[in-house]
Length: 404
Image 1 (cartoon, rainbow, N blue to C red):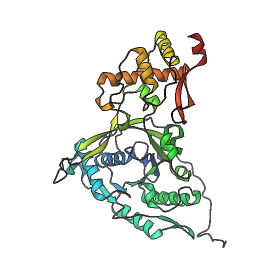
Image 2 (cartoon, rainbow, N blue to C red; image 1 turned 90 degrees about the vertical axis):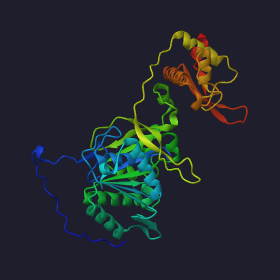
Image 3 (cartoon, rainbow, N blue to C red; image 1 turned 45 degrees about the vertical axis):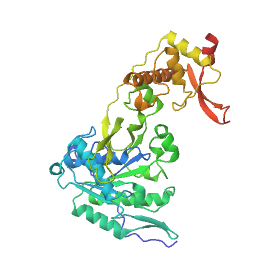
């Protein structure tokens, strides 16, 4: 390999210690996630609500309003670039969010800029037979656009559409994230990259944390702030209330925070907002999901010795151990509910369950979670006699069996 000469003489810079109060503060624009001159990362499974969340955050920054539990540091000019969806779909999502939050054109002003990758493609780094190459002319054009439009925050959703590098190639991903860092640095703009999780991460997001992110770890290593979104776990469902079922909710968790203290978890809820745009054959019009902040109530878990004995006996009396999955007809929750004499809506669709049945179901989950935590109950893999596959079932600890 031919040696590449230095572009200039390398001279180390002496450090001059000055009064700390004279050092300019970090320029946070949105909580402790988005900061001028740096790249931030949001990682989430598909279909959870991440695109709606970053759009609502963009509206919050453009209007300086607290929409999702964070008060922006004044108004910002925000450019949202979506590499997958057409412009009209982005318009629907923004319109629905504006309806829900009562935002009009005057409040928004000219501070929100939106583009689709279908009409304005961006591919900054490519990989071909010759290796990894940076599209410097497009990088320069992007830098120019950010400067000329005085962009404070650039949201890139999803990150994967801005390059053609193998996500598992560490060298290639280093080049991609280095390019985005350069853009953030020279424009003094906060860059938000939105990324997907791996298949394993989609199943075990809480356990894997930010490293549920798809591809090489170079992406995570190259940003200064990263957060990840997960669905409510069984443990969450056992201690918190989720109205209308868990599928409409997700949790925002701090995955990496080099420049600020670790942020607390935040719950979000997706709500449907009708646009009132019915026409012709489409008489129902569109109802679009909008991200909102949610404050679930904690469930107080109380269980008596008599209830423990009743639950243990009910499980022990079964010919086959009950299932751990709530989706199963043989879910352990139904066994527990029956043992305690409570109605959790067995055989009734969740949407048709009464408020009392939903509340009782949450309490049953909570008691199962407590018994799991104390070791009275545990899970194990067991061969299903019907199809020969292993399933996760709930069993009673041997000591409890001996006592009963």
